[in-house]
Length: 361
Ligand SMILES: Nc1ncnc2c1ncn2[C@@H]1O[C@H](COP(=O)(O)OP(=O)(O)O)[C@@H](O)[C@H]1O
Ligand SMILES: [Mg+2]
Image (cartoon, rainbow, N blue to C red; front, side):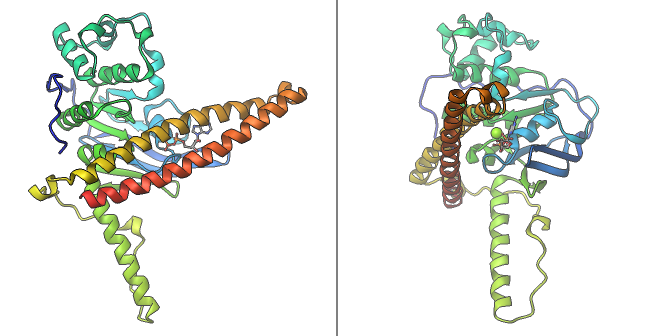
């Protein structure tokens, strides 16, 4: 685990009570297809979210994780069928949700809008965990920074009585202590979760299933992230072995497709040795994870700008104004270039994180 935090924020246990029990299957995705123009995200993909699932949706930037989460949340169009189970009471957290905060509410008022039964004192303590000090409580939402808004929106999601949480990059803007608290809370949470996160440590500590978008399909691995990495390594080794043996002219063993291979279902054995994480590796890992986060923010911001330029370019009024068109086109090309660069950096940092994690064990 992470080293003990050395600050004076309260170490409360966030109470994650669930109001009602949902059916065995919370959400069924049947033959879902989604594309943005020629950009195909999923094609004819099916999957199920069951009670007790804590799913981490992982994969490189731009794979469609946020899109899939929005489809599940019902705020994105798609083809195919999405079926809710009985008694599902869901709560969706994503960065853009920050816009729905009441600008004239104080922090305390805002927390109360989700109908929580918690006392003011409990809410104050909760706010403390999300890095809001005593002086901040009467601040209005409108004076908060983007990061502060993210933290208050997350705090709201956490105290809602939902039995199904959908969280898109919940650790963005949180420091290590808050991430630890969130991990603890999600572990104690009685409901089901699907989350998107590039923070591999966070994923390794919270998920009991891994989803990955591969070849426009949703691939499911039943196990923790650590088990998933081990399984991938085994598969890669097996593939390498079989290649070597077929090269030697031996009869090629029938190799099942990696994605079809059933993972070994076993409880993770957490040995003491495993818990001792090499400090240096961990520091480097955190640095790389921060870099990933920053790059993701840059990529998102650049994508928005680029999409804007794209829209302007296809607007007849831009087209008829030569200067404006030229300007827009230049910006568009610059943004495209930047985006490609950021994406390349993201891939590199992503690989580095994977490597460091397998070393850190
Ligand atoms: N509203 C949109 N219009 C067009 N393309 C989009 C839109 N939203 C996302 N995309 C594109 O779809 C792909 C998947 O995006 P997203 O779901 O945000 O990926 P991830 O969360 O895995 O990084 C990206 O290539 C992105 O540029
Ligand atoms: Mg995303």
